Image (cartoon, rainbow, N blue to C red):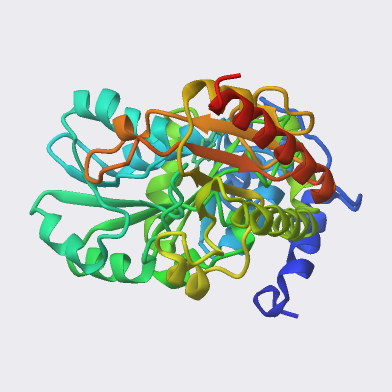
Length: 398
Ligand SMILES: *Cc1c(COP(=O)(O)O)cnc(C)c1O
């Protein structure tokens, strides 16, 4: 049966476990390798010819541990091939730098992950690449920002922290009319909750660190390209020496096998917590893509098959003391960066106005981002309820 016709849950279990990768064991084992030795010149030449086709050639080109995982991600995302990077940030940098050169212009979404923004302002700028930030909800008006030297349109949907969902098909269509390459940071959807290539994306990027790995113990990034851009992306990442350890690739592949069930439970738990938050008088609005109060909610409904555990909510007010009291002293929600593991996390994010330039952010209303883990949502709600009690005490100046 052709793999394309299979349901996602079946693909998650079966992809990348071909015998040529797994040698017959269930999980493709860890091949630690730098040198690969050959018995004849013919064998060496065969490996060279097939180095992009599952044959081991040299460690930096990968091993069956990597190849199986790469094949699975490429198929789930719907692209021609997947390059692995040592972090999500490296996958973003690697994708941009593979296609941009001095004198080029980049259109970057204003709600991008902060290090992506810093990469543009602090690194790409120094290489003579100019960035214009655009409103994530700009839609067809993106056309007015495209210049003769614009090369890449970069999307992140939903955006980091503020969660605006973008109209990806419309943006991609207009970008293609002008010959641009469309890149998407697709981490929130993971490889199973959207179809980036069907929406016109040319390169789809995952911080595999998040839901794919799923256990907060590996840093990894993936960039999956369409047929048209795959060779250039792969060769650029190779020439920049981007590799991941076989151990990390093994853990990422192992995480992938339970992605579907974990995501379904994260979604269910997060919806329970979000519904409770929505009923709280302190909450101004939810920034959860599955709720109408989230900007771009209509695109979530159209383009995503599910949500997950990551969302934000905005309070009507809150002093620094009250916000501190709220987030400190939680039992189950831990304060820390990243997300996508089995545990719940909480962040009070201040200063958002400083990382937006094409849009305005009302800094008077505090924003909290949560990642809802696999704990029982009743315990998480009790934790938040106690947090609101501490918040009120602090607001009353006690
Ligand atoms: C975490 C994250 C990244 C970066 O991934 P790392 O593996 O931490 O480098 C990129 N994009 C988004 C949306 C993220 O949440």
